[in-house]
Length: 208
Ligand SMILES: Nc1nc2c(c(=O)[nH]1)N[C@H]1C(S)=C(S)[C@@H](COP(=O)(O)O)O[C@H]1N2
Ligand SMILES: [Mo]
Image (cartoon, rainbow, N blue to C red; front, side):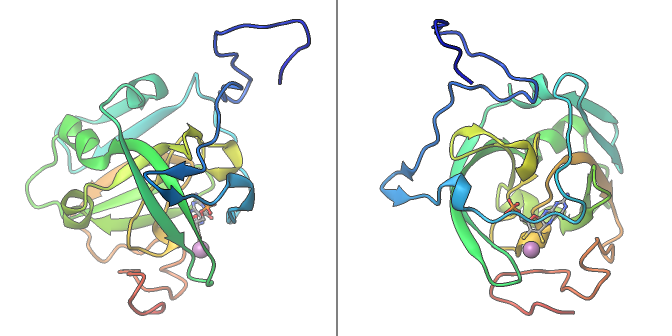
């Protein structure tokens, strides 16, 4: 929000952590991006509100060091930006620019134990989903805190959404609060338990 008579070059923070001087990017490297207001949005319990100041991302399970990473820490790692389309299994899609930190960077901090093969992502709304460790590392998959170059809006998953490139939207966890490393490669998340395919490859089967 701009207040008349108040002109400043300093980012003005609003309660939800958004910076009101951010400008959405609608084209990147010659690729047209879907404007955020035209992107679809899906959540089992609606928008979750996470406080940036008290937020920590917990990493536990088969790791040598349990981590609690603050928002400030998350956004201080070397970041990657990448254009990736999101394909919901229901048939809609959009293309956006995602910026964030590789899951591998976070896992390196935690030091994954031998024998682990799966990573489960837990969210504030009770949602969960899992992906193989190999998929996450081989594809340098990121957790994004920016969408089209603006801070991830609350209704879209603030502070973090997994950018599960090549996988259906139900693997793209939003409002991530925890990452668990496990050797349970049969783990089934919220939609997977309800019959959706655990591989979730965009060109593969939708159901188990
Ligand atoms: N925490 C959480 N993450 C979630 C979901 C959810 O209900 N809760 N829905 C998933 C589904 S089915 C889709 S298609 C995408 C939609 O992401 P978007 O809001 O960025 O379009 O979020 C995924 N991540
Ligand atoms: Mo979806």
